[in-house]
Length: 395
Image 1 (cartoon, rainbow, N blue to C red):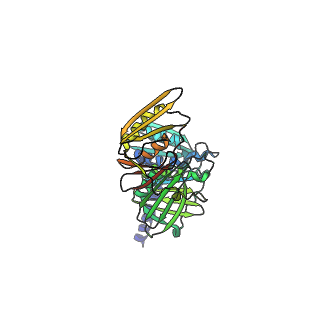
Image 2 (tube, rainbow, N blue to C red):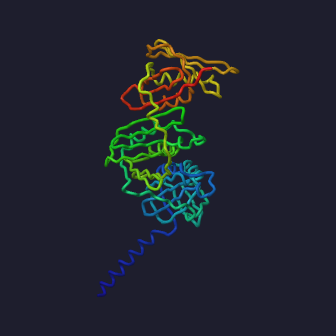
Image 3 (cartoon, rainbow, N blue to C red):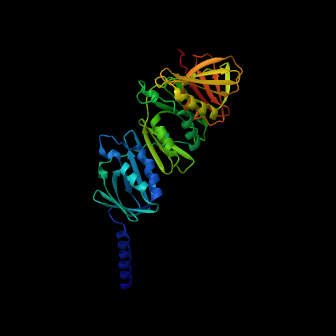
């Protein structure tokens, strides 16, 4: 009986010693590169000019001995990621994102130590030491996850990313009178993903073949800004597929290590596919890199108020011209493949560059009718990508 009592006392003592190693005050050690990547992911959702100071902060939460969760939100967009760490004290605190990122990025490579005292976080690495004032985690907004499994769509990450890059840039800015045009359409129908955006003067549409786990159909309008942020953090995603969840006008995009939550946009998006001409008689085949270089050279003399560059298509030749009455003019010429009638047509050169820089093809095809009708640009390969741009009237 005495031996049994001794064993019980010994086990209780062991449990107490194990629990005592986990402090109730937030403290952890973490590799600089791991933390820096995590901060770069979530800081994109902070609001530096928000009414609530805590929205400029990142919430750091230690929920286990080996993992930290990082959160940031501006209410419209929330980003969450998890990073590996050696946690010696559980807890949570919010710290200013910009200041924290500045400090961590300037520290030497290796282990960084964090220890919280009330709302002051002490950061040490080698002989460097910093103390940052935080804001209580209780003031950080509660995260509303979108976890409706009935709405779950599981698709490949790579074609989703490429589709956004190719066709998400043509949306209107937030200053647009038609706010819905500041969104991007994501239409998933079985194994076809269609992404499109337009600002009324141009249209980009890409179609990709995806692996859609349950052949589900979903059509959404997401803010263009959100998808551009998604592009930037997709580099850090560690798996080959993502899950989409929708509920109550919200979407959650989830990978193994990153979660992104955003509001959706409501309304009737323009029927953009009806705007695309089925056939255009004049076709020119042009090298993409040569066209970009020529445009950038000619645009140095463009009128900043109009941004107009004139394109003159003749037999196997393209001349690019720009002029500003008070400054002068510029002209460049490149060889192309073209055998149609001569045509002089003008565009906003920025719209052209946006397209060419997002074409993943060595050559492109420009399809025209008249110098005032819609022009189509598409890659000279199997890629299902179309860019429509309206010409500018030449005065």
